[in-house]
Image 1 (cartoon, rainbow, N blue to C red):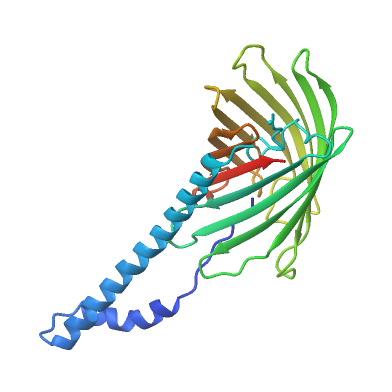
Image 2 (image 1 turned 180 degrees about the horizontal axis):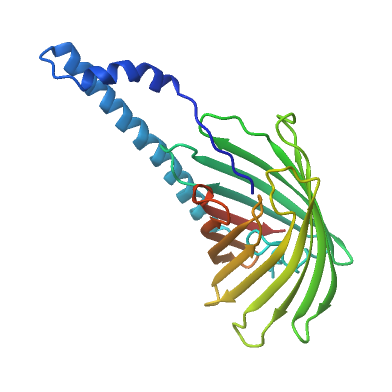
Length: 287
């Protein structure tokens, strides 16, 4: 989950800058007072509209999730860490992810939109693809396609153990002169404890191939924890070690919104800089 930072002056900032100096000077002129008042009002309205639009979008997504009723669903990932689940043959899992550092007015704010789909092709193999678009204030970011494949090569339901291996390609579609492809491969194993709400623990390792210099660690560990709290509410936590685009600690509450759909909302803490921390909302369903 890569992040980028940077900002250029917007048209409003360029225009408002010289006039803002006038606002800081004591003046008896009616025109000066009117200009200052108009600028302050416009800035407040713009901030209110931006925040209202985002809150409305999130609320609408939540309502849709609650109204959607679909039968048991495999989670292709815990949050960001690959799980040992695999989508069943002839089933399709679709998900939409929204990620933001919520600082709409702050330097380096970003919003990441990731629709994704996974298809079960049989023999415990799934294939899928993500499309990642990131909006960063004052910058253009590459549109990225992320094809992936996973094979659950071991599963023993009697003792609650499973293991999987997989790979994902991060391939920029636009701005390819500023971004290079990256391959992420991993293996994971899990153990589910007995009990109605017995937790599941996941661990594994990963490696990055063709990684650029800004990906400081190319190998690392994977940890995951899943705990149902009630029939419809659960706690999800996962962590990927390393100082790279994968290096995050993620935690969320998961809500089963139907027999075959769920909503997860939580917070990500970067291993490598507070400015990359983010809120997220994931909604997924299986057909």
